[in-house]
Image 1 (cartoon, one colour):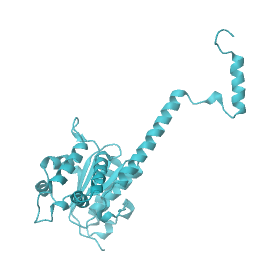
Image 2: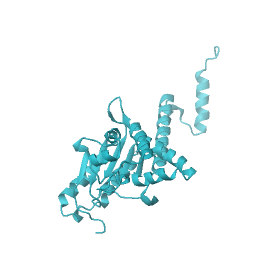
Image 3: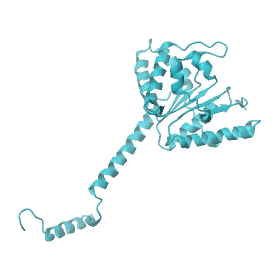
Image 4: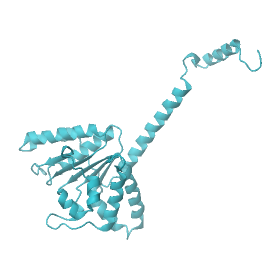
Length: 258
């Protein structure tokens, strides 16, 4: 042996020891692949952990989590079965599209026509596909914002909710506009709610590409014009798509209780 060079005999000895320990040194994973595999495994685990956190920060109506998937969608309950079936198919396609292509969508129509149900189906499908999702009842959120001045622990809760709303891969804003009053009595939304939502809206836009950084799905009973009477127009333009292909019109009948 010359200097610090390792002889073939020493290599063979190491192999024999490794073999005794059950290690196949002839088929070890290359260092770079080992590093890459472990980094990918770490990133997947981190994404799952963050996704669970986003979902846990959801603001449910009445504090009660809602559940719905595409198998629960019943077009036959509607007089216009084909229209209801088409809406279900469009929603399903959205759930698959947003996995790779973030975009904003609007589900609009009168109460009881299934907007929230299909928004939930989209959200849960995206969750199964590994995206971090969050559901927010804007009426419930507005109520929390109003309570923060009397209850100190609400401020910390709102800070966590805002961060999650900014970062979630898929954010569902349910019954957007309810916080601005009923039809015929529409008024501007309180300024602190406006400021909160504006910060969230800005964080979810990629201004360099003028595109959605992450997906926002809105369900609403209001027209765009009515929402602009409640909120700053810039906020509405950031959250609501003007692309007709990303707008689902629920011109169906109210089937609640059927």
